Length: 414
Image (cartoon, rainbow, N blue to C red; front, side, top):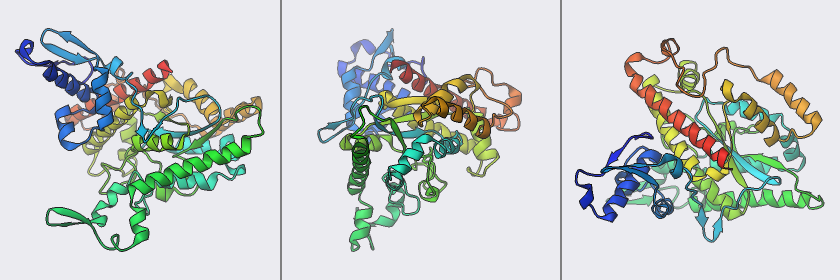
């Protein structure tokens, strides 16, 4: 259900109970946010109970017309869902000080360029000089570890090795049942606490180093894209991350990150890195063998991943620090300035150094796609996407536009 479409309540809507109407409004909201009906969400357990309660409490603003209702997308995206774990809640973002930053985006949208920026940034110089680099690498591996399959985000892909079905029950299998070290490694509660402890330790080291300063010293810590030689384990943490038989659920779960940030009492935020869908398909499927069997399955996968990103951006609008289209000619000035400030090029000399870095390292594509589908013409699609499957591409384009719009709305409200 896209924005502007209507969800009929029933032909006899006047006789329906308030509870029934409220449930249907929630279904409409979930169709906007998740792409499937709230009834399915209940059955599959895919919607966090706290989020569900807050959507209900928010009333899901709607517009009515006769017996039809539709979710007001602009109002729905203003619903701020906070992470509660124990008594901790994410604190409001402040300017200056230490901040952990995660880059959200489909694979093929510019994670490696972001990593190159960080690798050459004043922020990394500070991270190294304050002896934080090892902790930063451990923090990334706590989130995602393809080598050990024990990262908080990809532990799900090791379940087939961890459990054995006996009758109607699942039991921890060998060697996990008898090996304490393995059992601890694949315990999500303990992995969550490990992540919390790492975040706290970095914050403590920052506080100790800057305690003599009269004002906060801004320092951004990258949670992904910069791997420091650890790329085989963590990858870029894109959506999805790594090509395995477990690729579909192998993506960042932002709610778990922000839950750990809340427990650690640290500042965490994200940026959204985007690219036109045709360029994503060119990069990941035409030029690189990321997707098999081909374009249609890749398009379906990326459309589904964008719906996940869309939901995460809606959940945490106040955590959005930027919408970066490295290949979007309409947003170049915006991302360059934000990127420069985020990674520490603050003084006049550093600003000049950043400009020189961009000249030397950023190569504009020979052909830009704009951020929306308005100007897409047949010759741009020809040779990239099979014409007989254009309905799939249209879904990808709509998901891209909707997700980018949510990101930009979040920035406007900050």
